[in-house]
Length: 100
Image 1 (tube, rainbow, N blue to C red):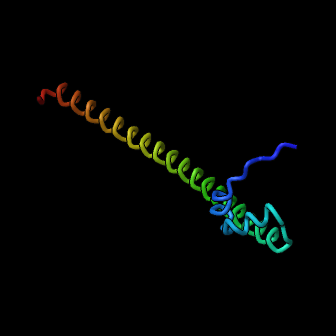
Image 2: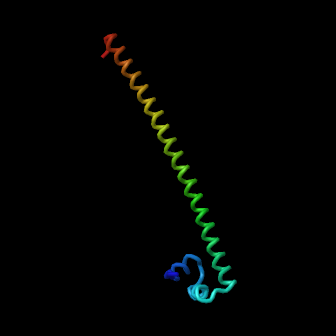
Image 3: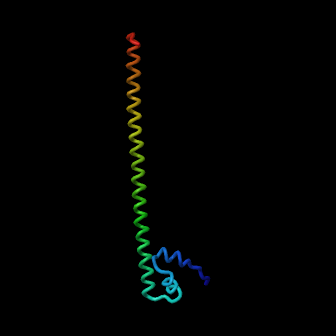
């Protein structure tokens, strides 16, 4: 079986376990070290899931904000178009009555 090179400094930082403890875990695992390592991995997994949920929530909020902004813009455009049509109608009426 091929052995994989382990990046112990990265694992140490990621799992919040000292490098010497990780080296001992790899070379001479004890129940205590394995349990400690797994507990740290569980904490990281829970943090990841929490961040994933926060990102999903932020994405949904952003999508809602964009939709609301687009709806608001369409409403404002409709109001402007209506006011412009009314102004043009009044201008036409004034021209027909001889007011310039």
